[in-house]
Length: 146
Image (cartoon, rainbow, N blue to C red; front, side):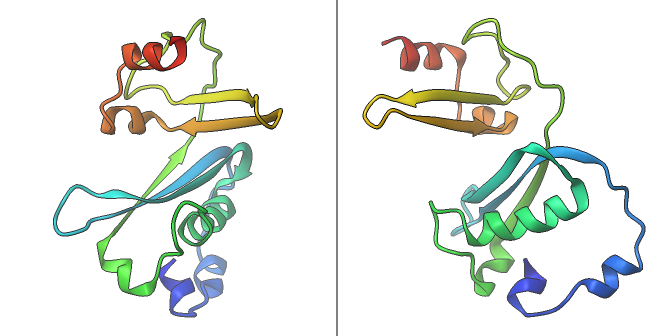
């Protein structure tokens, strides 16, 4: 992101460094510290499809910083206040029911059909989201069952 914002190319760095090209679903999350408080979400985008990790993180670092429709694009003046987390998703498994997961250990993917537009929708929550936001399985039971 830094190199993108200051128009610097990483071509020389990538050509002289040896990387492992493993493939995995991945996400890049940006958070911003404002006024010394707890960091707040500033962008998070990834893919559930396997991507090569090097190019995937390179692409999604920019995509999540500049094209997350929930936020304006990150600007260079914000760089000192940003934190970046990268997530590699592994070991997918179907849950037996809505309570079959552990806060802080499992992420969740929610898929549903929007009844107003008859379109499929989905949301992905990484494992740390539920813990950071103070979610509990009983809260989800209330949300989905009332």
